[in-house]
Length: 292
Length: 207
Image (cartoon, rainbow over the protein chains, first blue to last red):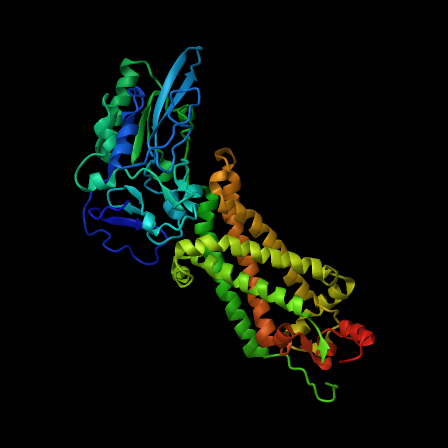
């Protein structure tokens, strides 16, 4: 899903500098999802399908109102319905709009080996460029939120684009436009943080949600999609939102120290055998006298 | 001349060699952005990604065949341990000072076992990388281990591969011809693999 309007700041699998980096000043954008005012109407799900021209797919009934158990390659925006039992035994219905979190330090981009298959725009949106995708699914392993989805027919991976095409043209994402309760907000990251914090304060002061908080996990450098949660101490209750997401340590080790160690070992090996040849030369066998 | 490798042994060796080179080169393309151009040479990123696992399976099949055929020759023995202690002489081309070796010397045996066990790890982790979405989210730590182990095992086999190619082509003269035409001279056999030479000479004196 490409957007020529937006300048790029990070490119996956790319050797050398990022073309055009820093030539345009752009505000970091963010989506704020107020889980406390979501009514689970799924208008955002429909708007996402409509705007992105995603084909119809069958839904999966799972004894809940949830459309299907997880997002899919052609279903990027899914409300997760969770029946949560509070400490006092009463029931609380937690609804969370699940999709790509647009991390500031994206694990998918770090893991991706294909030049330009994943980009991060100057405004912070993380976008898959399917024409450059090789279908290796390393992004699936790199993502701490379980978001990238593989299409086995086309061998390409898909996820929410934060409507980079709309944002590049100065519009808000389709899901934001469709939301009837005002639970979805879109703007600069700073504004959204401020708005989120003020809502958190309101929840604490007037609604008794003493554990209310803003979900903007620092382990991935903060996210371009933030949540206001009734209980920020237990994000797992919202359909498995990780409490402290990080790019997997093995991915960081593999793309960092192991790569340097490997480069040194391979180049060292080549230099080593060359030096051996220069110092000792080949093993010759004197065939003279030995019956051939 | 003495026959060292049968036609089928040579064929399987070259099947393993070519398939290894393919997975090595396409693997290097995915390993480093600076080497991604290799994928272009092999028909582009998606094509390289499509064939890499299949050719890897073929490589593993060739190695398994070698295990079946050479298991008896590849067991590490007391003779090998003595040979291994004197390896410094071998490296300095002081071959007269070496204890006698059998059909394969201990270096060749180590190479075989590194490629076999490296191949096992690469296959198991490779299957996990092939179908990551089939691994449930609750077992994702297996996927995390796989990306790391696949690269680590590949790097170890690359180290062994560099030494193997160097020794087989540049260092040990006569070795490359033996894996192409299958034959070595009696003097070569006597110098490098004395125990094997004495065994085969006893069985069939020259041809």
